[in-house]
Image (tube, rainbow, N blue to C red; front, side, top):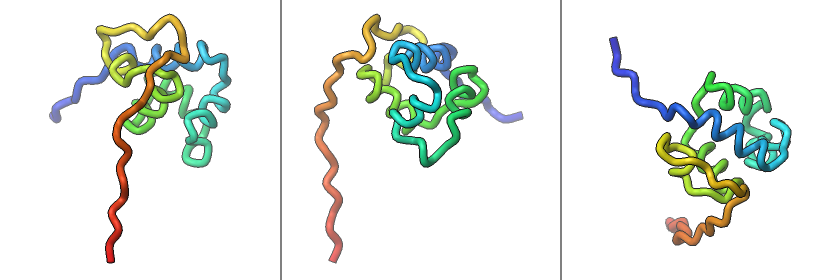
Length: 101
């Protein structure tokens, strides 16, 4: 009797839409996400069929590849832009690792 956390209802279809608009196969998408060494391409199918929820890091990778904001993928109230890749420019400050002595 645990609390089931809310999940985006439209995320799976948006992930498929991103891949299809980029004209990539599932294995090509995995390579584009730079996750080829970390998971099997079948995982992309699981994400697109809402059988498995991707990690936040994976959704962020989708956003970068698609050139869209993370909210565009996660929010059920927002649609993806008509043109993908979009024109989102990631200009955040880069983290500089500290040097320990």
